[in-house]
Length: 74
Image 1 (cartoon, rainbow, N blue to C red):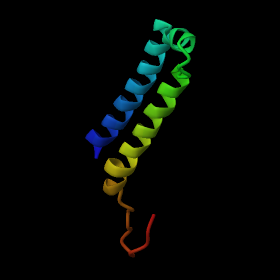
Image 2 (image 1 turned 180 degrees about the vertical axis):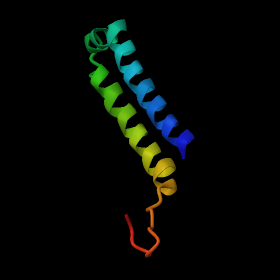
Image 3 (image 1 turned 120 degrees about the vertical axis):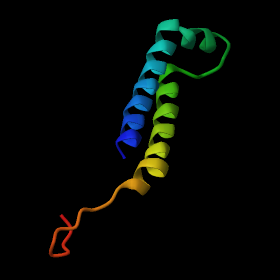
């Protein structure tokens, strides 16, 4: 589980890094000049969607509720 959570945080860092890289390279104005409406926010949103899919498919199946000695969920 620890490795899965580390992967979650690292992948979020990659998404944020790609956002800033796209922003710093100034790609948006060049695309907009060609009539392509795609910006750094689109990179961020697509990356976050992929990140949430990772959480749902990889992290969620490994999450388990703790049960105390009496059989109750904590």
